[in-house]
Amino acid sequence: MGSFDFDYWKNLAESDPAAFFRARDRYLHLFIAAHPEHQASLIALQARIDTTRAMAGSPMQACRGILSLLEDHLLLLGETLAELRSETVGLHGMLSPTAC
Image (spheres, helix red, strand yellow):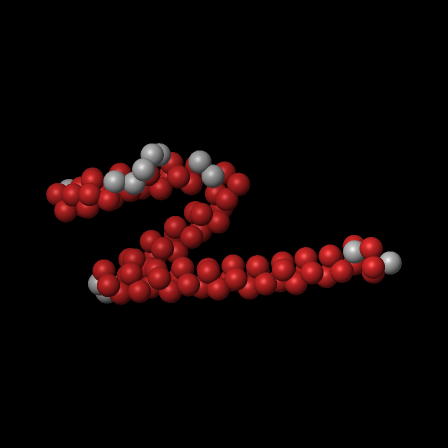
């Protein structure tokens, strides 16, 4: 997969949009296939991103929609992290020698 070459992708999108989307789809497929333990969630996330882009009235609206989607995921991750921390503190308290 290597490093991401922004200029290559930018130039391809400007010069041949159809080729850009074919290459993009191949790259996304390879990325998702390289992470089989997260395949279902990555496919679902990419479908939501693609739907957001398709329904947007402009590239700027698509960007806003995708950023909102990512914000939702980050908030959920933050909530999950807070729950894990709380559980860890509880377990630590139960397992500490002074708790017995």
